[in-house]
Length: 154
Image (cartoon, rainbow, N blue to C red; front, side):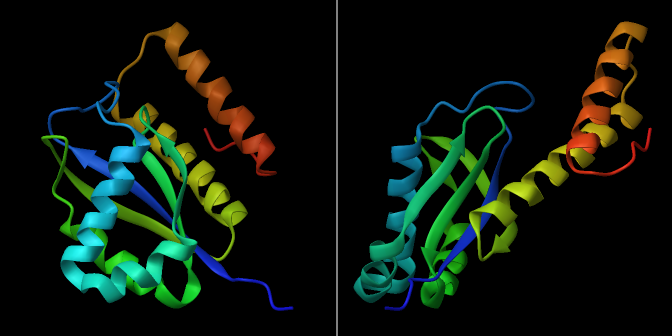
């Protein structure tokens, strides 16, 4: 028996109105419906029928605006070309930015951890924090780098 091979697409939602720490006002189900509608609009019934058997939203975080989609390997191009078509979900104007495409969900999570770590380091360099916040941020960065098996670069 042959195993079914999937691709995992890690994406970020970029919005103008809900910046910084505000949670997105919509849920996973609404996002999934918007993606399915965009595939049907761009590729028609064939595109929709080709992605539906292996399609799933594996992770959706309203706070960080990150989500991971699973699709059959053969039809990942159908899904990935349909993502830029989505411009709004529940009257929230947005853009979907594809960050990573991988063969396993584990690699997608690894990329996500590294991406978040880089964003934390960037945040630390670009903004001024109080001494207390600086110590807390340094400890978070150090712990994340220890978990990944790398030396801290502060």
